[in-house]
Length: 407
Image (cartoon, rainbow, N blue to C red; front, side, top):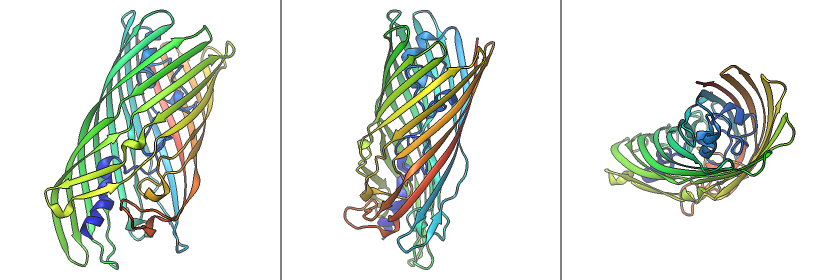
């Protein structure tokens, strides 16, 4: 029983404690610029501000001087679980902030950029007396990524870039046991880091058409922390150091941007997320009773994004977009820490420019398809966890704000 409780809890150390991620499958958060968010993140082949460090670093060669950007996405998720017995649970709905910061400098044919982003994370929480809380009460994770990239302009049409990523992870989980069922309380905390790389190309096929592609490698995050199990029928009091690792997925992004008129630009992006990296998780503890293996078996997925930007005048722009993203989580591996489903997103935004300053604001509404689960194995090999079954309904509201300055 102790190993089962730990297996259910330990997922937070592995980056899987996200509730409603911003707008990508699993617990990935691609929203790193309010202008891009206003176009449902169909932005890679446009990348005409300092956030190019993230969306397509090769496009930095098209930026002049020194450019900076600060901002955040504010996320409000809503989740409801209709249990198999007919009762219903609603999750906590806290606001989450996803900050971003960028700086680029052009040296001529060579450009250098630095980006600080939160590409994975968020949290979920269920009331201690909710049936859903038997599998998960509270989970929180934040991955902060530091990206240094350099880009070279080979010709007026072609640029390429390479970069390094260093990321940190900070995660916590609280699992409140049921006195009626004699379940213990579980607390899990962990921190860690990992290193990855990225590369990109940016091609101006014509005065009206830009093409772009970028790739970010998988990143193995080594995590160290502590785990405790207390209470329950056996009056447990177990404490131990613990270690594990999680492999964050690789991401391939391909996009096109077409200037349909002098005032209208249309963008289309396709991105692939290699979630098959999240297949099995091993928790190693100094106390062998708290060691466990979890089985995930997630699938690779593809997302489609379209967006547009219209220049009202020299100062104001308006934007809109749509995205569709399939879930990587199979029914038999469904879990309340990531009650994921295929989602559709609808966005709108506005941009303002005066002198060397830019201000962008945007909104994106995410609708998750209702998902009815009847055969969840949780993290076990063969035992169906009925706590996770039922119908799950979710949505999220995202608000983005970014401020840029050019020196």
